[in-house]
Length: 414
Image (cartoon, rainbow, N blue to C red; front, side, top):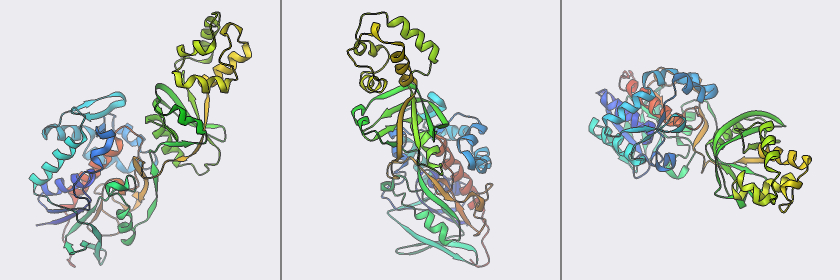
């Protein structure tokens, strides 16, 4: 019987192990934590945004420059396949804004528990609290994995040890080290999909303010390079939320980060002419601007916008000059924040970088350098925008790796 060792019990590792066992292999899953799915349990704020309803091209686009690598994986095990798979395991799903898919229960642990149960039923030997030290490789073929108590021999090994994001869940970069020891090129890992730290310290006064239906643009040396529409959140250090996380991925890829700004548009549904017409109409009232502004903005935003616009808050709106009105409009649609950096890997949702896709066969997830060695999930140099794309990549690459590892022919040296 084919023996397969899976290193890592996250989304991709569980999927790889279960699929390999289904295909007839004897599978041992090594997980360093006391439980499997530790990171999966906290995804989507504990709700688990497990996939997206986008079409194949939408998925490929979400991953940017490395998206084409995933054509095979997404074609073989798609978002629809994942939804059907969970339905059969007793976890119905629902679609929300932006095509995001969640379990109906809004409980990530339901997803983890169902997949773990499927693995065990398929025959996977899940060993928790076991840390894989390194791979056993001889004559360019893998022969298993070394653990502290000895070695686990196998015909195939699937490295699904995650990236460097949320290291408290066990993602400490071990997979990258193993890949390097096997001769693989590892693109330098960095935090991706992370909140943004701003230079403006006063944003802490807006902490907790959540905005919907706003747009945010990322500018480098004054040139707009990306824009997103949706929800965002002010924090004690800067900004976060779905549209900010997406922009943070683009920021992380910038070669020059010395002059980067965010421009927030609080009124994207109106162009400047429409907004000016509204203000001209409303400014005939005999009302202080501080009392009028709640019609335009949440209370916490009023003082920062008026201060930037240079309008004293006790100014009567019927005495606001055309120049003051134009200044107010500018900061309603182009409110600037200076980007300092993204938050650390401790808080990033996923990792950018990883094992080079050029050294992995996209049809099987097998290493092009070492026979019987496979990679799955975040350890590979693939990362996407928010919306369930990253988890689907973990499930799809895990499925493909497990299926093909189960078919791995034993090498003469083994």
